[in-house]
Image 1: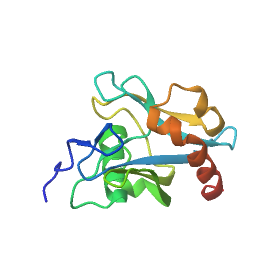
Image 2: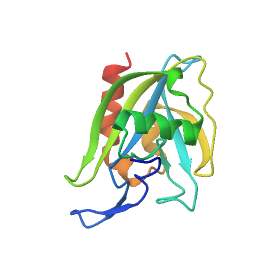
Image 3: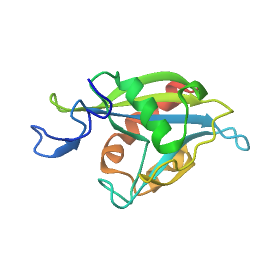
Image 4: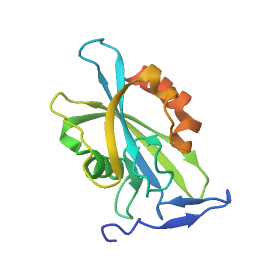
Length: 160
């Protein structure tokens, strides 16, 4: 039970490797845009050297053995996008991918007005607020692309 003990690849039964020995989690942060009053979500452009680099995803990564998925998602959001756990209100979580021996949990949270996301480490080239209805037009990380419709609908349900 040590920090970063979740880092590592898992060769799961689906035939593909996945990052996170104890699974992985990410934060889908939502806010109401000040000018349009429409929902926006925070996305991260992944650095080219990362797995599926050059695609847009949510801040996230491996969950350590001593963490819940929510704790892991919040830690990763701080490490990658500078979002502190005290600056968000967790609204929901969902398992977006479950291969029985590996899973990815998405934690949906509302951004507080004090949150100032930014590219906080080398894994993030850029972080930006994107209109909920425009996310599908970006070059999304394959995992996010595969689950986006369901996640978008969840955001619509919990963020109103």
